[in-house]
Image (cartoon, rainbow, N blue to C red):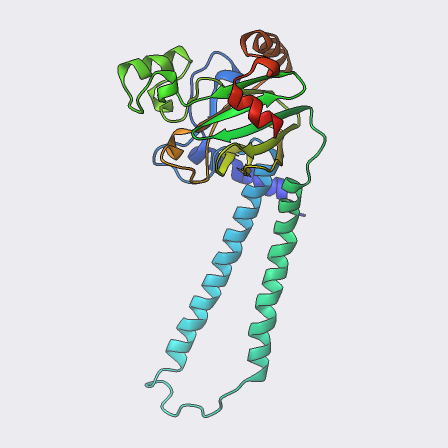
Length: 302
């Protein structure tokens, strides 16, 4: 039987031509894997089971839609040729055809049932939150992100490199480009890279509680297949398990004000050893929850 996993394995090489971003890096965790590519089409590399199933579902629905369009186009062509005035000088006088009416009612219902049978399990898997190895609380602000590693007791904010908070002015100046280089990026990552980043271990279940401190934002990483609105006064959850080390970018995906375009997301997936080492440094470098900035404390209290 032709399985979804086999379908995806055949589709993945073609997708990588569109979605993969070449990068020369010292280690796997420094490679930029999930990022938009100028002029490319298709998805970014699917590095979670969630995204792999979304890619498969997209391919399945594309084929199904193509078959439907081809059938309707062929039917229209047949009607045009068979029933034009020159080929059919005496038109029929009937007004109803019960078998046809039953068919064009039942067939669309059957198609919708098939679509639902394949798409609902994908949706349910996204919404059924498993027990996480790491829990991170995400708070959207105008216009940056705040992160709290709940079990580790520290929190930090994340700004786009080039924002006023990082000494920039939303322009790619020489100073901003130098900041990108100092952070391990290049000018190609302008508008994507942030001054701090979420770090998570590879092949571990990450659960995130997402909320907003002012207006509605939306946290998303395309390569992970996750997107969740950050609504003030509510905490919604998402989860993912990244299967490949590297750096992944996302953007706020809910219009949230004048600087909406300048609140990107950076996630770095590393080995367990690198993650453990990073945790030790992070606990020293970032303020603890007790001494975090007032804005972070307010968000954590919600």
